[in-house]
Length: 344
Image (tube, rainbow, N blue to C red; front, top):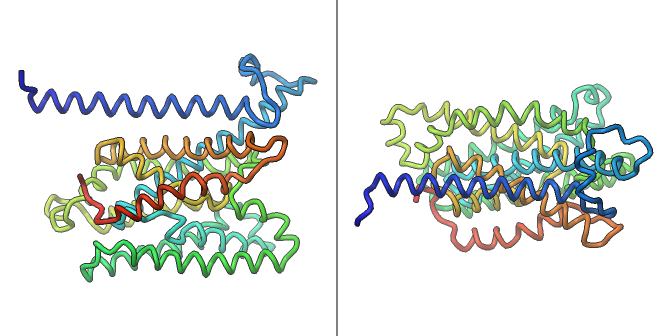
């Protein structure tokens, strides 16, 4: 018997639900593995005692030291993944990514600049990273709007080249400031490459107060983001406030990127890879793309961090290096299939 459109829609919803549940299960499995595996392997039995006072038990001390690192990695991965997915939609560009477009580099440049000012130490790392991220993001957004006005929305390479130029200039500035200041070099050498090493609960508390409101804002903007996938004139005719939705979504993505970068450093390819994975597995609707990309981003960061800790024990590789190795194939794949970003 022929299946009706209602049956096909119900089957699609069920399939989407199973995919999201599968991603969630994989993320939770990686959380457990990251808590137990490392230079010192722990038994799953210790998880039941995780929140007990450690006393003289070294295993509990190790477990409680790993917990904030794992949570910070999940939050940062989710933030960068959601930011990348939203920026790709706003630019209508499958190659867009906070790292490739210079937003991460802007946050880094702002952080190393303001960290040298005595009064800026009271602001916290997020507020030190935010000005540069906003400026870089505003420049890229203005460029994307100019391209759209000139009818160049189908030329993603132009935007990527502009972002690469911004990243190169700001990256050179960051390296120069760090190398010329030994004190700054000691504090930022691991952060510049992207690392979760040594993160504690203070870093987790520096992340979530900014990620939660920005994430909720994007959830509320999801219907408008779906309309952005249509022709812009069609979106306006359907009653969408194009400029307001675009600015709010771009600002929220920038806040996510700035918060994550200020804590874990400029982790490359997370937004690019997670966005492509979400679109490959899930329907082209931001109601499911955003949570799907968030789960994929957390999985990618935890997978890279786990490999960084277990490949060469007791030595530890930098998480950013492993993410670059894992994310480079996604960039190659995306570059080969780059075209107009639209609903399938």
